[in-house]
Length: 169
Image 1 (cartoon, rainbow, N blue to C red):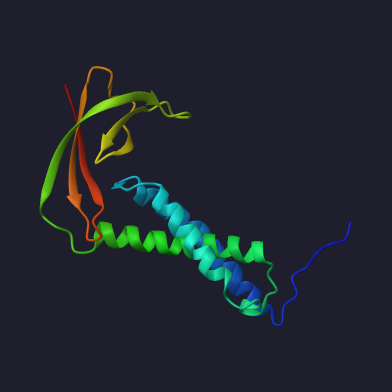
Image 2 (cartoon, rainbow, N blue to C red):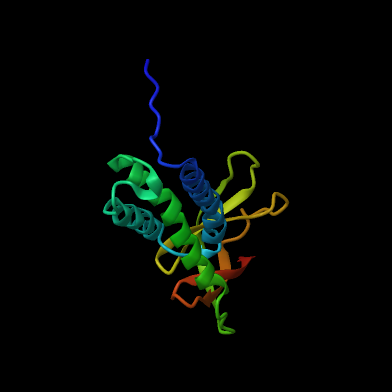
């Protein structure tokens, strides 16, 4: 079997491209943590990631001095720049220009369950037409509660941010 290598003009460029790609992978963890507290449709993230991949698809063939194929360019841009765009938008929505106006919404618990590994109780509710799951500590018994009171704050980009959750009967 023949090994395939990426032809480079200069070894420094390979390192820069790899650092950018793995920084994008690490930013995916930040996106997951920020998504937990933001009420947003998951499809928006698909648009962010695929949109960045499509834009980067039309960039000249030899970016950073690397010879990437079409699929590699699309995957690289989707991971590196899609996660950067998603993390940036979620951070701006959550932390920039916080409003003091809070809204408390009482939502019916639609589904109860447990997380797979730690067996923490979970509750799924519908907030602004979006299904959102919340995880509670093991010591809390959510079976006796019917509603979940959610304190929401409107972010600068129009997405709601969950500030606090309280179980109620």
